Length: 148
Image 1 (cartoon, rainbow, N blue to C red):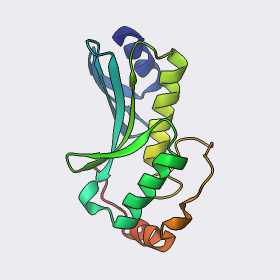
Image 2 (tube, one colour; image 1 turned 180 degrees about the vertical axis):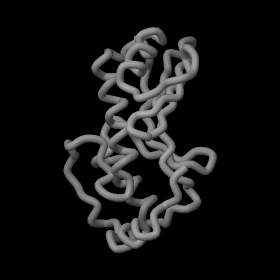
Image 3 (cartoon, rainbow, N blue to C red; image 1 turned 180 degrees about the horizontal axis):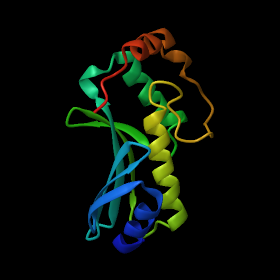
């Protein structure tokens, strides 16, 4: 994978895109994404901001950590600079076009499913969120975490 190919893929799958080679911002169905590459170190990431991490209760944070093991698959929930993100991180050169498209899809679905199924695809590994207090998650959904 190269920055030029990423630019083409992101342009094809997004509703709008801006940026430059190695650093893009784009939207899919009003969900913001960013992608950053480092060709010198063969790394890339696709990220989407979900919420102010300070607005999340402990049940939501614990549910996100459990989801990282069972339902988030190739993406993860992560916190940086006070923001909860949906994140895909991978070596750049080894990625195929299909893997990039799948990664964008998983980042999107992990974003929109945060607070409910926490799933990035329909596939899950064995396990469930039973050890997370679903009542606390539902209470948090009523007040809704603050979107960025």
